[in-house]
Length: 569
Image (cartoon, rainbow, N blue to C red; front, side):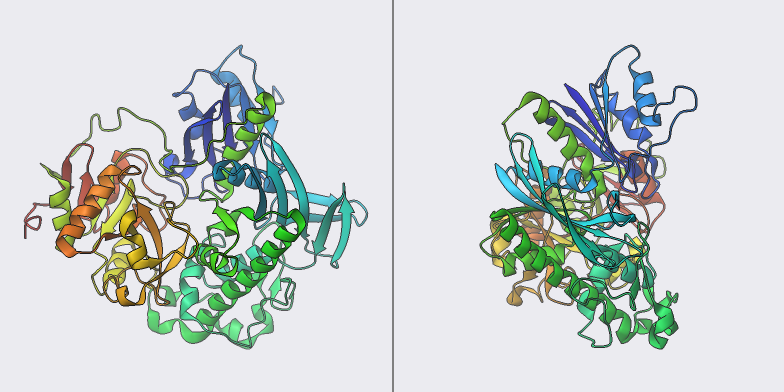
């Protein structure tokens, strides 16, 4: 049984399953080079290079209002798949009216838990009209009870609305709260947009937050994120800060020069980022308590866009040490294509065999990816991990390309840019090369067996998917300043030889030189670009930037824009 799951929104994605086996997952932007590209037609094409037929087409979105073809009167995605396999029957499953449920399903099946509660925190999911009040609302937060093979029951839902009073009701024994506020994720988006970024670039606000401090004049949260005098709801689009009601805010608005010039940031912007981060954490603490109370379960999977907030994820571990959490690494909308395929397969077959997510190296399989590479304009040489480690230890930035691309937003050593974490101003150097804002921190990759010597993982033993910004141990912070953020934390990936042998070897060789079992790790892209997917894209990024070196460990080659005088210094 082949199941093709697609997400058609701003995190356009494609997931192909053979029974319960995920054959590949890829986001559309990686294929088309257009950031936040939806409508994954390129992904559908790619799926048919891996199979000659599809039995189920699952379409994920926030609604079922898909574009219709004018002649056959079918949705365009069904039309494309039909034409790819003429004469073969398949079933289309529209999943746009179950957005939060699809988030919950992905996290549950990927967790490997037998049964669990799911907490979904998202911006604006599927729309719903509350008949009694004729009010159009959107999913904001929800709690689910899940178990194998395909049992998924809503326990609690909260909806946000633009124009209504807050009220509660019950539908099919599920308590529902309708809020007149903006929801914590939309509040976060509003602050992000006010700071001069795209509303869904919330990771930038998260990076700025540790520079701030408590500020009593910032009234983001009244306990339920309903302070309309500060943030005005505008569902389903991004909500916005009411700068017109505050002279200080009005003076700051729409001025982005501080992105490049640290001296222009001002205390208020930093405090604003701090305020929304802390308010959001407190709100989620309450939701986790509610999840435990309503389900009786202390295995909790978390998903939805806010699930990528690695700073908050770490705080939950401290606040709830007796809860076993799973934080879905593909928790944005793109990951939904995975969960519903699993749900349909298990509903049909009643298959009880769990398939936990053990790797994020899920990109398309391309056995010919190194064929016919055009090295014109580059210098190539045979090399080893030892030589590349020395190159990094000499202060050089090295791009790393190998194998299948990583699913989700984190680079984990297959599409990474790596650097020496001991360089004092390393953050500034790489931010400038990648053309990123000055305040944004970088992640680290550590040999798993040394991780607890350098970092405090609280109740966890590892972090293979880089879902936590953990405390760097105090005596180690001065040793790795390039990846230690202003608050003493670092978003960290633990690496084993089994997970990624080439990357593990590189870090090991660097450790022999520097006595530091860690590499500075950031995604292989420039600011505003998707992560590279192909070797051609990798070479184009190298050619169009100040990046100089590219290591292809599977070929044993180092590629440079000039000679190799620095390799053996």
